[in-house]
Image 1 (cartoon, rainbow, N blue to C red):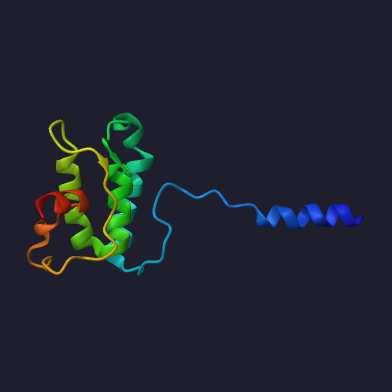
Image 2 (cartoon, rainbow, N blue to C red):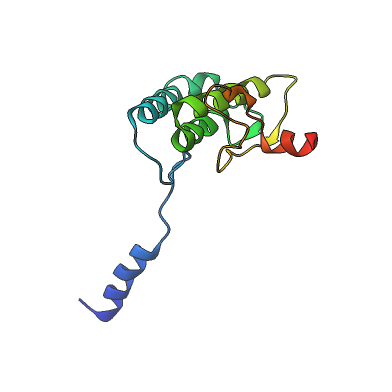
Length: 125
């Protein structure tokens, strides 16, 4: 092969790979997290096409739920997803609402409903 062909092969490896829409960062692969993420992914592949395109937030509620469960586990991630779903209603908020990097000190395992989004926490201060 010529030198030019070898250079083309090297360029193919440097192209950015296409990423999916769900969280691809590191997380512990515990059974609860995998179960919760599996349920959300099943919804994305089946029902989301019929119900979809109605989320008022970025990322969408299912993407938020997938990332929340991956980062914070089934218990806290499930509660975060439930409250996000409630906020996504007709009289709820809209806009950018990312998953928090870490849990807040006021969030304990027995009071997970004390989750607040970043935007509502900034408004309440």
